Structure formats: C-alpha cells, structure tokens
Length: 273
Image 1 (cartoon, rainbow, N blue to C red):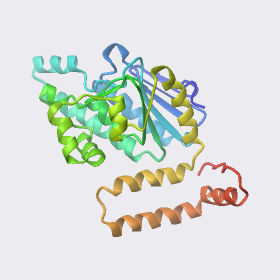
Image 2: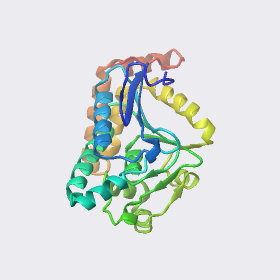
Image 3: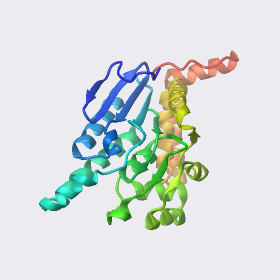
C-alpha cells in the first residue's frame, strides 16, 4: 500500500491526489515554487482533503510536497500582484478562508493524517504540517513561521498549534523571532515525530502509512477528536467524551477483533468500520 498514489486518483493541476489500497496520498505539486500556495491550489487541496475524508476505502491520509519542499506557505509572487492591483485584502480573505477549511478537514479527518516533510515547511505550510497527526521529516527539513518576515498575521491555526505543542514561551520565541527550526531540533521539541536521512524518507513514509492503515481506524478517529478536545474541555467534559467514544467503539468490529486477538495471542487484523 502507498507505493503509487495514482491508483484511483486524478491530477488536479497543482495538487495530486489518489488512493492506493488503503492509503490516500495528497501531494502539493508546485515544486518550482517550493510548493507555495495560491487560492487555486488551496482550493484544490481542500477539495482533495474532502475526497479523502469521504473515501471509505482509505484508512490513512498522507500529505506531502513534490520535490525537496513540503510547502513554503502563501505564494509571495501572487501577493505582490495583488498588492500592485490594490486587491491584497481580498486575496488574504480568500486565501485564509481556504486554509481554514483545509486545516478543519485535516483535524476533523476520521482517520490518521501523516505529513511527510521532504524540506521546508513555512508559514501556512507549517500550519498544514502541524495539523497532521504524525509528522516525519528529512534531516534537511526546516520549520519556519515566516509570517513576521512579511509583516503578516499568522493563520491556519498556527497560534493554536504552537502554544499547545510548545507552551506560550517557545511559541512566542518562534513567532516573534521567525525562528528557523531544523529537523533535529523540531524532533527534540516534539514538532515532528521522526527524522530520517533524505534518501530514507520515502521508504519510511510508505512503511508508516501502512502501519497506520493496519491500525484501528475508528479508534484512531476518536483519539484524534479527544486529543483536540482536551485543549478546550474541562476534565468532566473530556471524560464524558471518552466514555461516549468507548461505548461507540464497543458497538463496532474493531474492539471485538482486538479482544479476540489478545486472547488468541496473535496480532489483530482490524476490519473496516
């Protein structure tokens, strides 16, 4: 699984998307622009994420970038054109709206999202990466907020993810100094989960996607929901959500298979739910 994302997919110009087995892969495909995003590509990305969410045959979603970058964030050349035309506020309204929808799709995805970072993840590209559930990066990857360099306000949930992942102090340090975080440091901070040599990244992406695809998709979906609700819920509300998820899982086939496998001392083979 996960070897060729073209199996059931289609090219959407700046975004490639498709499913191979249980792995739905989305690739930001503007390598000549370091996978920078304009409104058209952001719209295509959001649509691809919606397709992935509704694809019941897929059990994991991989988000990556073509070439040696994940995404440099918003396309500055498009911003300059809008500035010259006097339409910069309109552009930012459209761009941030599409980014918000894309982030919501990733966070609300009822299956794990794996972000594979072959290189830079900057600005909105960093937001997309941090929204994912598992992040792997090449040892040449760099994480950069980038917003303050342009005089822009962070978007895409960056001011949500960074304080929760790092604490307010380190988030301030990153955002106010536009700190460039190399992959090794990002691993220490928990901003990525694995760092690989550049030549090993694709192999590990395929391997990790297959591992997640073999897991309990329904339980993973609930775990995602609970981890994000923990940012806002009181303990009473959080435990109530946990109880609801536990009962719903007990009604489905995954938990039953897990119990049988445990008793039979074998690896579980989780079915679709």
